[in-house]
Image 1 (tube, helix red, strand yellow):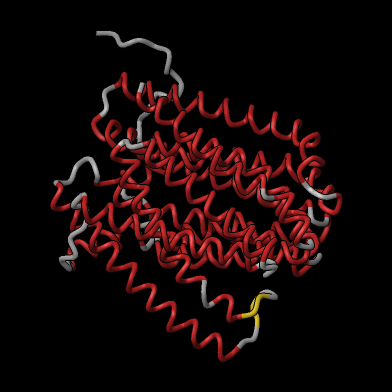
Image 2: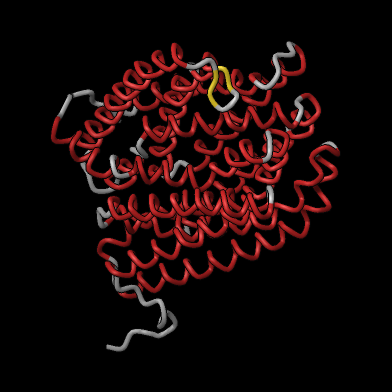
Length: 419
């Protein structure tokens, strides 16, 4: 079935894509101290916040309407997404210039470095829009080539600026900025030559986009809080040294996220086509795939936690060896996040992104409370406990909402139809 063949391609490209930064760990942990590595991690966190505000997860609109809109309407949709993106870029830069005059640094990062991040976010979002188009076209091979090429270019750029030019932790950001500039040029070329972009300004289309995407801002920010605020709490309550060590553990745990994302990349285009008008047999197929997905990701999380204690000493310096104690909780957290991700398309189909925003915002607030309490009582590992618990709560609430609006046969999936 094409969903599995594409998933295998996405998995292969994702493994190669994630293996490259993973293989860079020996270089980064040798040339950067845990404190500098922690600074880099916080800078990337801020970049993700900019992506949340600027991008608003607008690529979801492409997946949602790709199979049901005409080519001309789809081109207008994508064109207006890019117009919104340009507007948010200008808005954020107007705020950034004010920040530069008020503060010398934010979270131990000089503000003049932060000024580069909105541009990086803009370029990354353009690339994401193009990848979303490719995914919905079913062009898994080209998707994989772009992903892997991007990682290779980032790696080469980072090594040049870190090892040869000796520019410190900022080296990876420079490598990313140059890489995504090149990839965004290709994205613009592909989108224009394939006729996927019409810049005809339309209030109605913008309203349709924002109706789905604006609620995604608190949702994406809430997800960032759940997934990344732990490092801010560690930096404030323990120190940058522990942020660097914890981030190394995250690099291992996120392997589960790679498997989840690879399947979802293939799953969501198929789901958006099949689910809205699906017969009982199709619904049972959806349920079977979902159960199989649950089994695989949790089995992988447990296996990863076991083998990582043998692999970790081979790829990082001794300063980062204590990261092994965090990996089990982070891996399980990514598995729980994977549960939420497979239910996310249901929320989009039923246009209930506002409910999703409420769930994520509520869970994010709990996450902040959990982080403070657990880190205060258990130290750095408390952050991993907090993240796992938050993802569990988020997944349970999302499943509850989905079940309220669907009638999938979760408990009679093996029964056959009776005429």
